[in-house]
Length: 216
Image 1 (cartoon, one colour):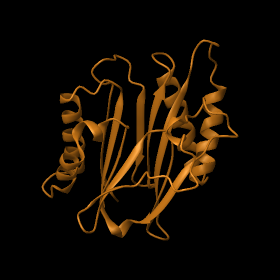
Image 2: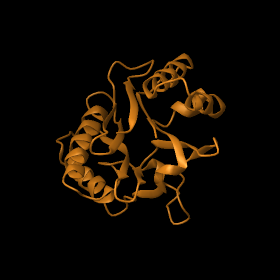
Image 3: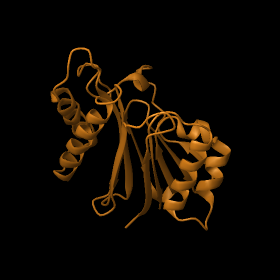
């Protein structure tokens, strides 16, 4: 089973945490949802998407189908006309048969890896066919016909660490420092997560955020 660490925090300005996550090492999937819409909206959307995604993945749905089902679940949550309610979503799933890792995302949540050469790599880089507006899309907000699920697959053996995080974490910590944290052989996955979160908070991360680190 893959060792992984995890944490979610409301940030320095908010009481309500609009970010949520889940990880299941036995079933081999990890996800982060960052809600938008403010208190009473963003966290509701993120939680609804999380529950839907977990159910869909356990049933064997593909990442794209699971995300589209979650979009329907978020849209079905009652809301007033004045409230915007949505969430970004990112899922990392391990394919035991091929030993590959499959990544799918909508919105600004990001994933990075440390490859076999010890180099930092951003994994959430859209290909040429991906709309430039991909980072502004959200479940429950973007029209279903326009909702684009970006995806990439890679060999797990080519990476020693995978980081999934809310959009603001790495820019605040800095890529050089984040690389140093992930490459520390003495740290557990949870210690890496705790350090990243502490340093993001030290740099006044205002929005809710979540962090997951996998040691492969």
